[in-house]
Length: 474
Image (cartoon, rainbow, N blue to C red; front, side):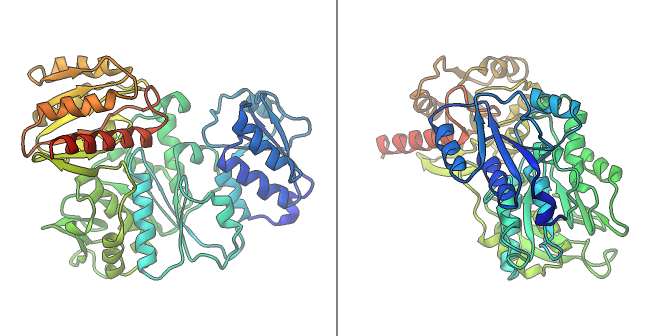
């Protein structure tokens, strides 16, 4: 923890003119630091943001993000900047530390600041963090879902020690890489699968950054029983004396685990006699949607809440009150006996695998930017569930080839177009393949930027196309 005096007169460079960069720049300038923001962009949006900061006495350098401003004694980076960036190489050569906004938030916490319950993982972070916040609110606690979502975490910390009782903190691998000092009350790694390897350089480096979330945990390190890599990270972590490893599983839980028994979420970790007792927390039907991977999210959120002392009734009430954000296995409509599900947020194979496992007979809409992913395992695991497949996007050939190898009998429609009307055609062709009782699932397993601004726009295009289909068949 630091005081305002620690920042006065320091020359700090903030890398990135996004939301987190602007938040950090304003906070540090307000504490008396001399702040320069650098960003390689130079368009109208950048100019507008730069003008606003300059009006507050903050220097901004646009169009050059490769050289370090003279006199810099600390660099604060936005999460997406790669460790290999030339700016950071120059900082390292000059002996200047590079940290992220999460690290700055941690250093700015006061002596009575709200503890952090932290969550990371390849998939499910946002949903689990929001579930946790809902449970904490149901327990009557003042909280917020922050970090990689919501209000910038620096702003939340500067709200004061008495503003919150506890924070639900989503942390990406990028953020953890730049946050060496963070020490959570309790933390969870939901799952690990190859992702962002171009940023981290290897799966080992990616996993190591995820594992930082366990360092210094006080009460509980929550891991996924079905994903051994998460348990391995717990074993490697340097934690406070007495901190426990707590598993979550979709099966009946062993002692020190949370799991599922006869449609009931149960706790065998935070009970007086975990060898003989289990506390009922909620029913599977209290979780929306009750897909297997979302039940796992709920168990992880419940484990963190229970580690903080939350009662079982608050777990139930919080899960009942929670509704996930759009484009996360969202039911759009039922048309002619076929359900249409938008999981545009499934931007990698691990997320798509979880989504495909939630339904029995599927017409799958997939494709986009593969980001170096391979699809053999995904297709082989889902082959028996596939009624048909509609492929879109730049890297659809990779999925088509995997289908030819592992599901050659499944009908495939390959749409060779990337214009804005492609999604409407994809939905129409999927409807032709589907039969009553089937699910048309848009879980692309790829990023969206080849055809759409982001996954939200892709999901909106899917939902619009489904509604259009429904109006023609009404």
